[in-house]
Length: 486
Image 1 (tube, rainbow, N blue to C red):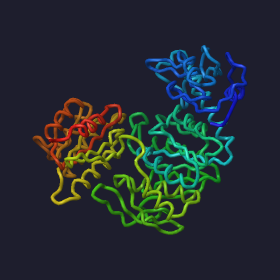
Image 2: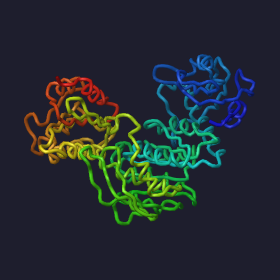
Image 3: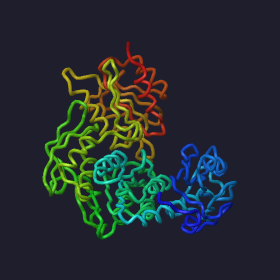
Image 4: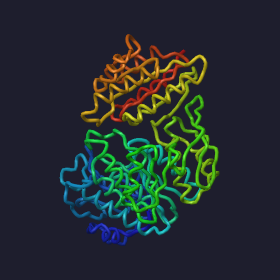
């Protein structure tokens, strides 16, 4: 973050000084975990389910923080954020926030992030949203832009009213690009995030079924995702997926320049001659208005082609050549955990850990990757799909799980292991599509899945593990990597 005194921070957020002169200067990072506080930092006192950051304010100062941004008085030099009206819009709600102190801190944090990013005249803010693929694409964008200048991006899926401003405040006078991932749980959420750090470049990847239970329909999801392009200035750039009609239709909702990406012939930045290797890594020709280049991706899955095209379009608009983009994409690695992490055991078992999140679109893509990897050799390798529930699908949940079970059969996945009663319809769909006996197995939990796989997985098998993050199926993948067949 740029250097600011506590007095300046108090003025920006409309707060008051407490146990502080105001001359204290923040020279370090902004943190909400006392263990990560660095000398000169600013500590965010946020309540949680088990502990309240306000109780650790003094500890944060002992660890090096020069002050605390708090929602009520603490035993440390602090800026006390003003109370906020709760409810409506992108409401600042934290579990354990019984008196609104956490909401006050988050609202103040948003104001601080807006102030800092507005002051950085040479900073370009890039926003990415979509029903799936946001984190992987954000990671690709950051790696492709890095050769053009210092780039900041959030770790993992740090994309809400805490992660968004926290990431924005990592930027300083040297930062040229700030890549932000924007999530939404309702209409208006992305619009509010765009006020925290105003994007000049916005990319919408897709409109799928993720969170349809909260939004009510894909059309409402499109309405929410399109808030990103509506926030762009006239000299901004909107990168839209030409292969998704709901996304391509957002072109009419922005004043910014529109760049279409995809395999569709209408796309200005597109991929042709797509081929997959035995690890489902794509090779393709990148076609742009400024020339063509051959790209060989190091990340896994055919869905990464679309992600790479988005990164390429953004980099092209910000000054990179097609050749530079191809080189950067070829070197770009998986950064965030539990997302198409392909590992091979000494006995030849390949484990694909894609267990961070799951929705119908991402599970279909993962299953197709599994099929590609397993059939890349002759004879084909035995394939396992270990799938857990897809959360937040609302009334579409049973149908969506049923369709995934049927797809696993149609793709000729050898073994389908369905984990948990919440995904039972997936198991039933596989049976109705023609799978029976031990080809499709329903187990109650992660422990049962691990026991089954340890007993039945053999050298050379390929195992995909995927579910919504809250179900913790990444533990299955880790257990498999620890248990090597003898």
